[in-house]
Amino acid sequence: MYLRVLFSLTFSILLSVQFAQAEMRPLDEDELTGVTGEGVGLVFEDFQYNAANSDFGGDLTFKLTGIEDQSNNPVDVTLSHFYIAGPNSSYGTLLDGNVVNLGRLGNPFTIDMLDGNDLATGANGWTDKAVLSIAAPTHIDGSLGYDCTDASAVAGSGTCSSRPEEGAYHGERMDIGMRLNLDYLDTSKNMNLNLHAQSAHFDGSYLRLWGGDIDVDGDGADDSTMMMEAQVNFYADKLYVDSCNNDGTTCGDGIQFDQFKLELALGDAQFHQPMTFDVNADGNFILEIHELPGLPGTDTSSPVDSTTGHTYQGQIADDGLRDSVGTDPATWDWYNDYYENGRKTNFRVEDMTVGGVNFGNSYITNLQIQHLKVTSHDL
Image (cartoon, rainbow, N blue to C red):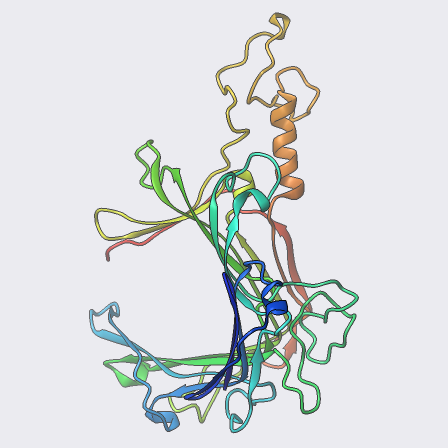
């Protein structure tokens, strides 16, 4: 495995690592003048990760305990195999010498500190904030990029930077998979679940973090907390799910998704709608994408009769029309901007096959999360 790390803070270094060997090259004056402080870029070349327990010839030990069935007997959840490799790995069975590149030198994974004022225009949740960004390779112009889900894509067919394998060139799309075992006290109930993705990548994904004030514990008062916005993109030529016996030798019918695309938008700082994570006094977590606040700074009190010239700040008439009596045009425009330009989630599968039966394509587009709250509870 090769690891290339691109630093561009107050200096610039290109580091190439193969196992324990490393070579560092000094930069000349002309190269140093090109440093502009973008942050840190990461590229993994000739990469493979393969971890397995004794069932698959390895020494991996990863077990979740403390779970009980309805009879209060223990149920152990064990990760028996996890791999990241090059394409055509045959669900993790052909891994020898099968490597992949993660990221490109011209479009790496990045860790960076961003100026919130550069991320959006006008007043928004990032205004005057320093934003920590952790990001996968970005989308690029469609004339240069590759179709995001086609394992045989060629240049100019889409917007993804990660390339499929071509000849001796490894490309940046990986096979990734895992096998989970559920072990019961009554071994006849033991279950196995396998998840495999072929020619997969995460182009356009990012996590952004910044500090702000919002009510995270529900007491009506703002709390200083870490705010988040995330874009979780996952593309794969094929996604395959099945269940087998615990050593993987006998499997039932599987579910296959062809040309799988998930573009999940979590939080929207432009519209003051961050995602937060909190732990309450009972030790349970609260993950929340907060409600839309409406047009910030407006008066949302009951409207006055229009004959007095009241502008109905923060109000929208019952008929929902912009020009109706009882509608504040600025508030209407703010919500319209959110529905037109706010962050949206998309999901698409070209073909879903279950037990050899093809159910055709399925998709969800332009889904917006206006409020989401997930909490854990003691059983």
